[in-house]
Length: 194
Image (cartoon, rainbow, N blue to C red):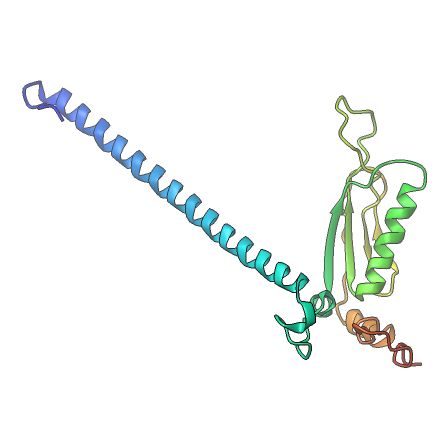
């Protein structure tokens, strides 16, 4: 650093202010870079553990890594505590596409015994300049019994629907999809109460 006392005091103050601003910005950039490196390292660590788990799981010959008496939780257990699932998509336009979107949302509500909020990309109404896909709209809210609670058309609009979470418990008692789930086929077990 050069000696700034030989110059006028105004120039020295300006230079000191510029230096302070530079060091402040450098410290902020260092903190930002450090946090990005930390997030990257944690992501890599998580990815390494996930890879190791799935690699070992796939090469679990003769139950040497995971004993056969140990049961791995299924994806259905996550659905068992979920009462509302939100799905967003751009379902491509075409003949019968809106009916497919509605049917799949209703089927997902039935097999998960949860409310489904299916938000579909609205139809732009006119051809776009780009080749980006356009949606058919048809956003809907479906009850755990597969009934459509609220539905939107092809145009953009706001849907407001009442969701009764006690219907989730009733659907799970009545339909019993999750209760009947098993990793192995049990034909004598798969029936809903009458």
